[in-house]
Length: 409
Image 1: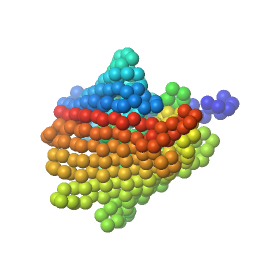
Image 2: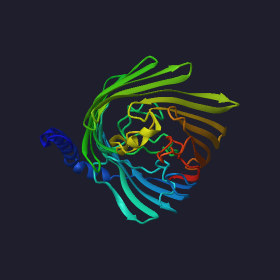
Image 3: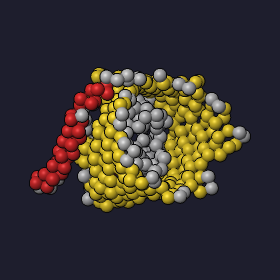
Image 4: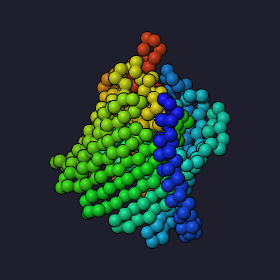
């Protein structure tokens, strides 16, 4: 906190009030939660195993990274009540300190702003990390006109698919190849449906980082009108005022998407927006799908010299930045070569420094519950400046290849 200590009192009071409401709602309904837990759980499981080998780069050593993620899930319901539970363990082996440390989450569900104490480290060594996390623990009450959810849950207000600057709830890393489960956030959420094509969505989310306690609280309205879907929200994001508008429209078989937000952060008022299009085609009897997006982010670096300041900013520390450049594009093309085999190419391009990340992949479905994937990451562009500072956003990304197995039980 900065400034006179008295200035922090209203901020702390907001955080405490929201925390009390969230805890109070959950504790008052504990008997119901207990009753739900006694019902047949219908347990489901998810297992991901990724092995990645990376060449050395300016900021990482050459080495191998092995990630295993096991997840148990249950969703008992009774009448209008539902309990959502997910618990997982993640085991990460690295052959050398700093090896393969530049490749997003690789399927790991993590959050830099957890408030509830539902995660931790079970063991750590120079080469091995063992973590556990309750990624979902929420209680929901739903009627045709109202839905109330409290606890750790998944929330997405994104309109675009890869670059989503107007989504304040733990967005995916755009280079993340494993998107089966979005990271849960701790929140109280109320959704109302006052008309057939109108939705109101209010969220209060307290967050904790190593440096601060913050509150994100906003109300969103979304309506469908013909081929248009229009939405907007307003409130505070990590204690700072923010407002957003978004739109989706279908034109000639393509879905056009746009979202933008005006944010106040660190004494600056900044505009962030993204536009994109996606469409499926039939080519030689198989499905070809493409996505193209452009993002303009006022918080991003306009030149390589600005990158360290963006990397170590409060927004990056809270996981709010999906890319660090001011002007970035994302493109993905995928083709179903065979009913069981697909090819994919993802590119991220920083238009300001000219660097790019290229990520081709091959996916094979061995059954309804088992799939394999092989892929590469490769960066292109200046790695370092003459001063030894980063030369571009993606230029220092080393070439790496990975193999993965995904199973559902």
